[in-house]
Image 1: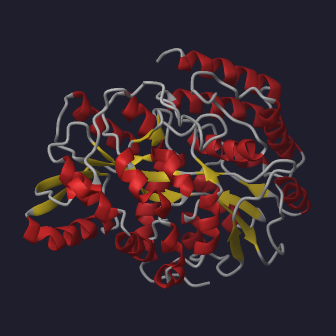
Image 2: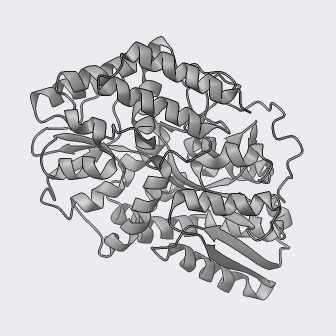
Image 3: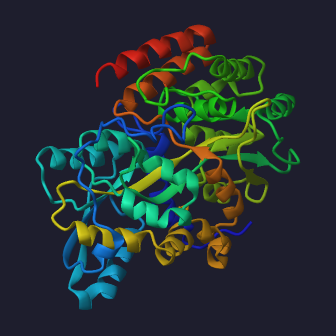
Length: 443
C-alpha cells in the first residue's frame, strides 16, 4: 500500500487530534448530539436566544484589518502554511491573519479559550474547537451564530459533519476537519470485514479476536455509541433534557459487547485498552480485527504487518443499521471578536476546496467537503479515502449537551464495569440513566 514520504510528521498532529476527538480525559466538557445522534436539537429551545449573528459571506468581502486565529500547537505546520497563504492572497485588501497557538493538551486549549470568553476578551477572533465543545460554548453565548453563512454553503459539506456545529436549531461554526473510525483487518488472515457486527464477532471468535478501546475513558463512549446507534439506540431525548439510554436497543448493544468479551470474540484485555494499546496489540498479531481511527493506518505500514492489513467502514448491526462517531475540529467565531467580517473571510478560505485539498494531501487531515474525497491528489495521498468518505458519511455526532462531560462519564464508566463483569448490562444502563438525568438537571 502507498504511504507518503513525510507522513510521520503529519501523524504527530493527527495523533493529537484523535486524542482530543475521542480519547481525552475525564475533565472534558461539551457537545455531540442527542437522540440517536446527528439530527437532534434542530428546533430552537431559546437556549441561545440573543446570540450574536456572524456577518454573511457577502459582508465579509469588505473585511480589512487583522484576524487572530487561536488553535492548538501546530505540530505539522499546516496551520502556519494556511495563514501564510491567506495573508499573501489578501495583502492588497489590507486583511491579514495571525496564528495564536495554545498548548497541545485538548483540555488546556479549552481552558485557554474559556478564560478569554469569561473575560469577554476579543483576543481570539476564531477558535479551532473540538467537535464536542459546541453546545457548551454556544449555551454560554460565547459563539456567533453562523447559520446564514453555513446555509449558503450547506451542499458542499458531507452532511454528517454539519451535526457537530448544530445546537439549539442553529449552526455555531463551520466544519474544518473530521474523523471517523475504521475496522482494520488482517487480510492475510481473513478475506474481508463481514457485513454485520454479529458476523464479525463470530468470525473473530474463530481466530484471534477483535480489539478496541474498552478502558473507562472517552474512547469507550465512542466505541459503545457506534454499536448502540447502529442498533437503533440513543442517549438523549430530542430536546436534550432527558436520558433515553436505558432502552432495549442500547441493552441489546451492550449485551452484545459483554458477550463478546465473555466468549473470546473480543480480547479480554480490551477493558484496559485505549487507542495505542489496541494498535500495538493488532500490530503484534494478537487480533485479526481492530476498531481504531485513521491515524493507525500509517503507523501500521511502519510496523511488521505492513502490507498485511486493510481497512473498511464499520459494519451494520443485525436488525439495525450502520453508524460511526465523528471526531475532530470546527472553526467557531468568538462572540467578542473585534473583526467578525475578517473572521468569516478567514474561515471561508480555511474551509474552501483548495485549502481542504492541501490539508488532506499534505497533512493527512480528513476533509469535510464531499468533492475533496474525489480529488486525484487526495486519493494518492490517502489510499483509504473512499473508505474514509463512507465512514464519515455514516457517522453521527455524540450527544449534544452543555454537560457532555458528565454524560460521557456516565456512559464509559458504567459500560466498562459491564464489560469487566463488575455489574450487569441492565444495571449499567440503569445507573448511566440516573447519572445522566442528574447531570441534565444542573443546567
